[in-house]
Amino acid sequence: MKMVRPEFIDFLNYNICKAYSELYGKEAAEAFFHRVGEIGFQELRKMVEFPSSEPYDVLRTIAEFLERMGYMSKIKLTKVEENEVIIEMFGVSVTRSSIRLLKEGASPSHIMTNLMFAALKELSGIHADIYDLTLEQPSPETGYGREKWVLKRL
Image (cartoon, rainbow, N blue to C red; front, side, top):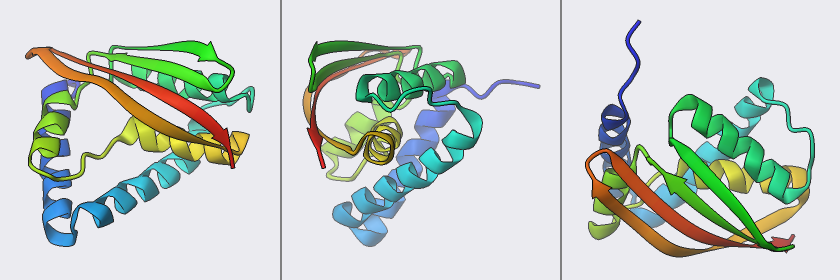
């Protein structure tokens, strides 16, 4: 069996996100992808053990899953304070399409973000505010993102 290449995931991401954004608008697309994350988290719970409801551990569990699946090559989490985490993403398969979608005023899928949002809400009673620090495509093979997540009780 052949493995799916990251470029194909990026290709699909652009087409699906662009089409949904065009048909229903950016806000509806954001709500749709948020729901995709909620459904995805329910499915993920059937595949992955969440040994802790501590927010940092929840984020780490999802990061490890996404690395194993090849969605990203590496996700580095740095706990800055009890309620603040810096997330660095290396080798992001959908960076090119996400940058393009943002420039075009469409909504990217943000599958990692929406999975993490759903997990934090359900397992930890937490909401995260995200502050984008960096999103770049330094080479065709390398996508990089860096975000600051501020965690708040619901």
